[in-house]
Amino acid sequence: MADTEKNFTAEEREAMQAAAKEARTRRSRAKKSPEELRAAGEADLKEAVAKLTDEDRLLAEKLHALVSEVAPELVPRTYYGMPAWGRDGKVLCFFQPASKFKVRYGTFGFEPISNLDDGTVWPTAYAVTALTEQDLEFLAGRIRQAIS
Image 1 (cartoon, rainbow, N blue to C red):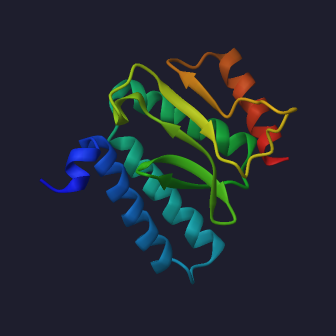
Image 2 (cartoon, rainbow, N blue to C red; image 1 turned 180 degrees about the horizontal axis):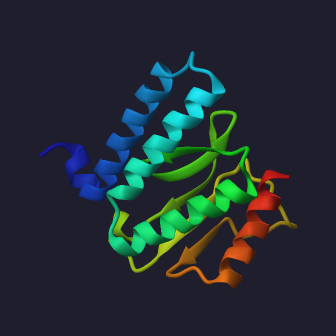
């Protein structure tokens, strides 16, 4: 048994394989126009969302609509095979579906390029089991702050 098979779960190995594929894809798209990159990223994100369970797919679709509305400058893409949105080639926020690692809730998270700093401690991820209008408004505010 290879070391990676002993040290990582099947889900973790799958995520690493997705990340490697995404890196190859980014290199092959390096000379594309911003419009072509957005279209390709949108297609990748939609393909990843289509593979999710019904519950995760609904959440991912709502989050994609929210991010697209609140921060249209962010480019859709995938991140370890998960829906994500970024700028300047870096992921700013992402949705980790519950089914990805067989956990009880999905996570909407932010990467370090996000402008969420508030003192010396601040949240960078939120557990998501459903999305009410109030939840969407809250996350919209977090996204606006993250891109500011």
